[in-house]
Image 1 (cartoon, rainbow, N blue to C red):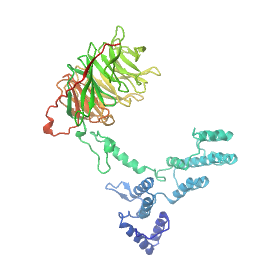
Image 2 (cartoon, rainbow, N blue to C red; image 1 turned 180 degrees about the vertical axis):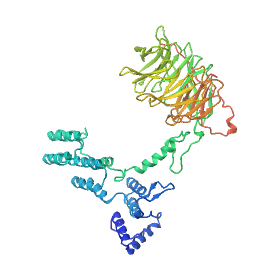
Image 3 (spheres, rainbow, N blue to C red; image 1 turned 180 degrees about the horizontal axis):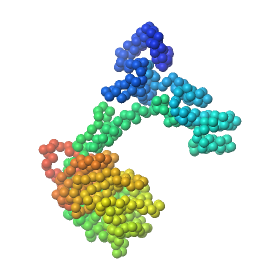
Image 4 (cartoon, helix red, strand yellow; image 1 turned 90 degrees about the vertical axis):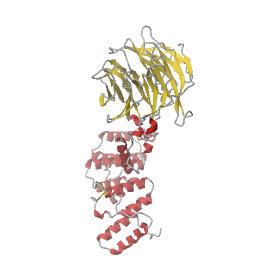
Length: 593
C-alpha cells in the first residue's frame, strides 16, 4: 500500500504520537502525517485526535460522545474478526479501545496470572468498591479452583483463608469452596461433569463474567454496537402501527415505516358453499386449511393451494355432514390432522381431515355441548355442557373428569392452554375462570359487563374478551390478571361476535361486527386502523392466518366467507366484485360411533 513499515504496536505508536505532540516535536508529526496521507489514498479521512477531549460530541443533536462512538466501533471490528482494521482505527483516531492498564489487566487474566490481575484491577481506578471486591473475589476463586485441580490443597487453603475470606463477599460461596477442601476429588469430579458452579472456567468464560462485574466504560460489551442498532430497529418497528412484515425486511439504510398496504384490506376471494349463516371459522396451525361451521348444520374444510391461481386460493376439500342442529364451532387438533365440530346442545363429532370421515361422536345423556376444545396434547377433548358443567373425555369417549365449580350459566367458551395446566372458561355472566388443573385452584377475572366470547393469544399470556357493551378488552393473565388495552368502534347488540389476534407477532386485533364490517386495531396502542366493508350481514367471526401475515378470513350472516389480502391492484379495479371460487369438493356424511 506504499506505507512505511513500523514495527511498533498500534497503541504504542499512538502514545508516542501524542507524547511528541505535547512536546512540540514537529518531525514526529510530519512522519506520522506521511503515513496517514498514504492511507488516505485508499480510505476515508481519519477521525481527529482525542486530544480534543472526551467531551467532544458528534451527530446533529450533540448527544453522542465521539470517544465512546469510536471505541464501540473498534470493539465491533475486533468482534467481527477485523483485527487489523480495528488496530488501524485505534491508531488513526488516537482513541484506544481500552486504557493501557485495562489492556494489561485483560492480558493477565488470559494468561491466568491471578495475583497480578488482582493487583492491576486495583490500579484501574474504579470508584465502585463493590465492583472491585466482586471482581477480585471472582479472580481469586479461579485461582483457588486451579490450585485445587492441581491438588495443591495447602496453597488453595491459603488463598481461601488469606485472600478470599478477608474480602467479606458472598459468604455462601465461601462455604461452598471451604467444603471443597474436605473432598477435593468429589468436588473436581462434579466440576468435570459440568454440574454446579464449581467448574474451572475457561479464560473466555472468565472474561465474559468480568464483563458483567465491571463497568461497561472499562470493558466495552462485545456486541454493544449490534445491541444499539437492534434496539433502534426495534423501536422503529414497534412505533409503526402498520408494521406487518418479517424482521428480515428491516434495513439499516433507511428509517422503517410501513403503510396501510401491509394490512389485509382487499377481498381476494369469496367462499359461498354454506347455505345459511356462517358462525365460526378458524385457520389450521400450518395455515394450509381453513375450517368453517354454519347454521346450515354443516362444517367445511377448505384447502389452500397455489396451483389454482398465482397468489393461491381456497377450494372446498370436505363438507362435513351429520349434525342435526347448527354447528357452533369447529376446532383444529394440535397436529391439524383432525377437527372437532360442536353441534348446538347436541353432540360433538371428531373428523379425519384427510378423508373427511367422522371418527367418533361424544355425548352425555340428558345434556348437550355448548362449547368444546382440544387437550393441549390432542389426546382428549374438553366441553362446556348445558347443565353448566365442564366434561373431559379421552379420544375413545371415556369420561375422565367433570366438574361445575362456581358456574351459574352455560359455558359459552372454553379453552386449554398449550401446557395443559389451565382451563379457561366463562363461568358467570361477567366472570372468566382460570382453573389450575395441577393445583386445583380457580382464579377469576371479573368484568364490568356480560362476556360473550374470548380468545387466547399464541403465547397463552393474554386473553381477548368480547363484552356486551361493544368493547373488547385485552387481559394479561400472567400472574395477577390485569387489563392491558381496550378496543372500541365495532357494533354489537344482539349476536355473538368473535375477535382474534393476528399479524406480525400478533400485533393486531381483528373483530367482526353487526354493521357488516371487519375492524382491525393496533394491539399495543388500541388505535383503530381500518374498517373493511364488503359483507351484506353481521360478521360473526374472524381468523388471521398464522403463517401468512397478510391473510385474514371473515364469516358472516350473509352465508359467505371473505378472504382478505393485500391491496395490490389499482383503485379503479378494487370496485370489481371478486368472483366466488368454484369447487368440486366431496360431501361426507357422518353416522357416528
